[in-house]
Structure formats: structure tokens, C-alpha cells
Image: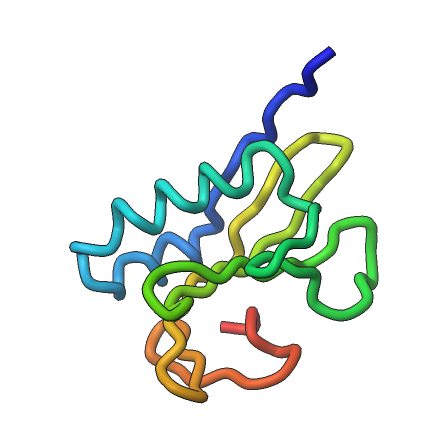
Length: 112
């Protein structure tokens, strides 16, 4: 029996982050998020991984994609509700991660 797909929701902050990224990438970002996160958001792959130990039932994950893995999406998963909540969308430029124009490092990447 096939499992129901996860629903994907965007936090208000993530919607704002998307608005700050060039419009020509919006379709790629939305399409990739839905393709990667609707069926198996908690299966680690080369470009999808958990970040640190979760402090609660929901865990924070990172999805990397685009040319040279330029884009980063940070999300949490609620298994019981079968929901993925996109928390932040950023752009990786060389060794810098920019979310809403701010630079983030380490585990505090979703704090914007």
C-alpha cells in the first residue's frame, strides 16, 4: 500500500526569503522542493541530510540543489501530520550561506 504524500508548507519567513531571490529561479526552487520533499523528506541522500540532533519530535533538514548546489532549503518534518514545513531558503556563494541577505554559519542557519 502506497503511503500518502507529505504536504509541503512554506513559513512566512521562507516566503520572504524566496521573494529576495531572483525571480527566474522561483520555478526551479518550488519544483525541486515539491519533487524532493513530498515523498521521502526524511531519507538522507547526497543532497539531503539532517542537521545535528533534533531537540524535539520535528527535526531540521537541509536540501541542496541547483547548479553547484547553489540553493539551500532548511525544513522540518512532522511525521504524524505528514507535513514538511520549509523554514528558510538561502543561496550558497563560495563559502558563505546567505539567507535574506544575511550570512549564516554553523547550526544557526535557520535563525533569520
